[in-house]
Image (cartoon, rainbow, N blue to C red; front, side, top):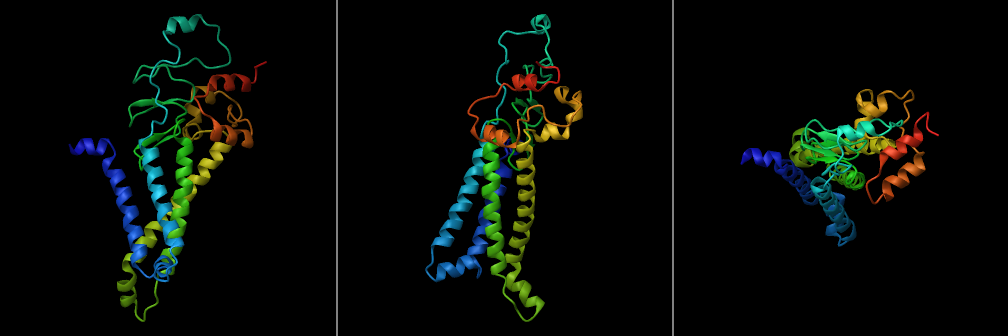
Length: 264
């Protein structure tokens, strides 16, 4: 049973939820801006902060439990290696069959060793989510990072506002111990989420995934291309628009063909 709890990510999700609400409780129990607003009867800031934290938790579970774009069936029904060899080859590399789940992988898909599934437009496996980030949940992952960053920065400001000056260091640590611990945790997470958000915004703007960026030299459709530019890059504005507005799976093979140096 313990192994099953680890496998389903129960402990990771429970830890995230518990840590979030413990820090929120510490901010409301100490003499922070949130507590002072509450005492003065100014309920709007505390309520907005609470709703922002609630939204971040809901987005966390949505992304964590969402299908990231698992490959369920062969992309080409009934195809096999003999039939593929009869098809005239273009500039697009041949679709490969996954050595683990034995399904044909669409371009930009990758098998995740943790999830034991192939994921379309695989970006990375997030251990804090216990889920992959792929074609179907990448947008929501970005929204989660943005909301989480806003909540963390607000919590950081609230924690700093609650640190009270005391005569001696011993009294100061006793008075601010829990708040100082919350400040350290929030500070570390703020830095991590900010870096993640900036990195993903850059990768989205050039239409590249984390996996493609880190393992370009091992990916069949990238390693033999001379330039470092992603073959799927259509310019920052188009990339961001497509990323935010795409409603269905994209045939990346067609985009790759149009970007090939010898394409007509």
